[in-house]
Image 1 (cartoon, rainbow, N blue to C red):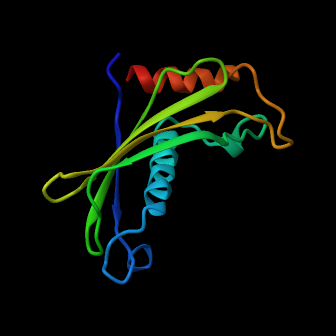
Image 2: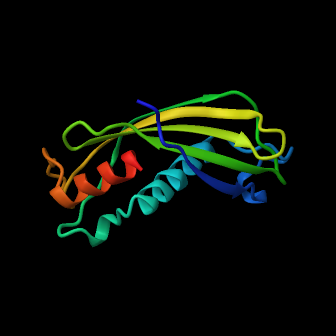
Image 3: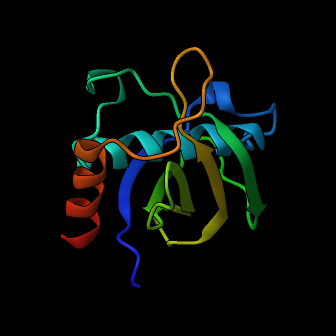
Length: 138
């Protein structure tokens, strides 16, 4: 199955950098989250607007750093959603420098779906599942 990548541009802010102008490694995970939210928006999924509030906490995350982003860069976060298995989501990420398209990092995250009280959801809501299917097949 070919992945559908959603692109998000993120300017590197001064606050994300060390005194040498290099982005601290923790901000790549923030950029992953920005990508996840953009993908959800493009799929028409607004977690707090579903019939029941749904959370999708991270249960595993991985990031391989290839090259440093620097202050003044614009990075492109590419995010893809794997075909869901039950109520479990897996995303893939690639982060590139916009100019020159150097690969800066790549990674994956895995998420369990839960209700606000922490109870696991074992099956995707029909509306949620339909939105994901439409997004993945478009």
